[in-house]
Image (cartoon, rainbow, N blue to C red; front, side, top):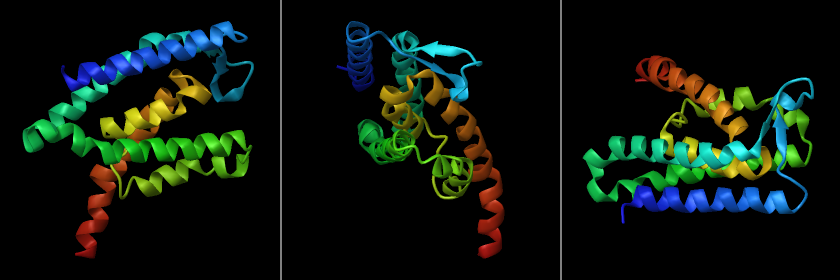
Length: 169
């Protein structure tokens, strides 16, 4: 079986299971943008469509980038960046649940700094980030978050970082 298809199927089963678990245990939560009650709330039901679709798209992008160089080993080469996305997202989730608001307010600066060293705009990083934040924030908010910071990271990694690297050499 195609690894993309298998991973997408597993992710689909997991998100559907999570949503049904929520449904039968108090209802499917919705998350307000920026935690402001006056802003729209997005239901976790959207994750049933969004997460498998994102998984397929991001795995396809990863495969297209890595397969020409690594062949059938492309998935193995994607694992470290995927897990880095998971670890960073779990750090944010833990800080959020522990109500470390001061730490969370520094996230934009954190992403600016790590963008000098890590391509956070790569699809495998984004997928790990989104999956790790799904339980706490649903799918939509982490997707929006990483798209914004991924774009910022792309600019930093591709355009600003080379200015510093050339001067250092």
